[in-house]
Image 1: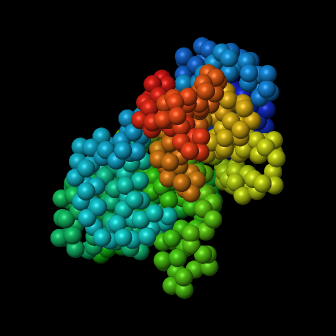
Image 2: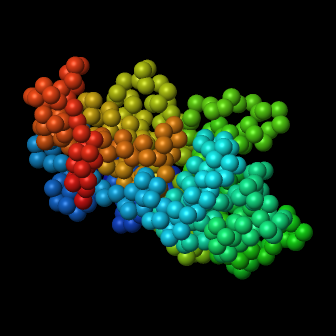
Image 3: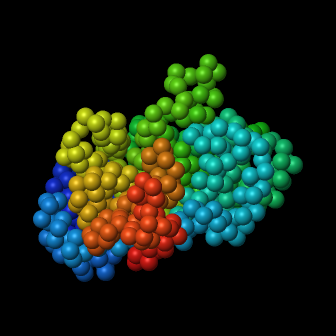
Length: 454
């Protein structure tokens, strides 16, 4: 793992360099400016494209004063990051882009009442399975891995008591093979029947007994809940199972989880579902496990700077709590205090997008449109890289849509357009309603967003 140094990055759009300079535990994070999530350092915002960098002096600090914003608004706009094809496919549910048999597999799953009608963590089981499939496909994982994601707990699991197919019945295993293929079914069978906790010290990392996930050389012997009793797990299978596990938990990380905190507790548990929606903690073990298994993966995803960077539990927890403080105490905090807290959250956990979204909204309200655009762009880049959202109070598609709206409106305000959206004709009464709202074609909104992409 590379060691993170809390120096100011010479990258485009580094408008909040003060937050950059805060000291961060060098053992918990790392930095690589040229790969993955734009160097993975969010407080200075993600590096822009070469086109954007050419328009902005990357060596000069960008402040957020009114004069600074005015200067940028008269000379610069911030391009939209290109939406990756697979992210577009996820939003449009174009499953064949993600897998040649995607439409057929997802359609088959949609006919299963046990998937569609069962309440999972924060969505239905069916929505969760699609989400996990989409994440793994966006991360470029091979066929058997992404297909396992689509049905990962079809045979239940070591932590999940429910199943769609009985792993003890060959006829039901054959049924699943017909849906996802032999290789994916084999991996799904292992996912649902072995004790994953011992794989690469996974359980110890989650429980913070140790901070690093190390995969031993050769096969790992794990407990198997069938008559076999144990299973000699090959390194590639162990790595693939843990990669599916990361995507599985990323898709459902909320503090109050339906199946875990309610369904599987006979007395109904101690927490009222659905809770307040606060993000759960998991990036500390996502990043550590990703780093530990990367040498055994057929495709190393770009998340966590190609699985090179890690974040500590302490930093993740502090970042989450700072973000949540702004979220829940907005009326009590000044905008300056909100910005300070959000910038610190970004500096501690530079993998998540949502703090940038909050910053973008505050800057837009303040008329600091360049800073608002920079923050929105950073959020979108991180949403595209991770292929999911951290704050599950809104859907992944909604977060992306809102980020694109923020970026569009900030750019149009810098360009001194009459409307922050491409309204049809604000002077034509046929396109102004009774509340003096200027009518706007949604087709034109999305068209302009795409035209602004790099």
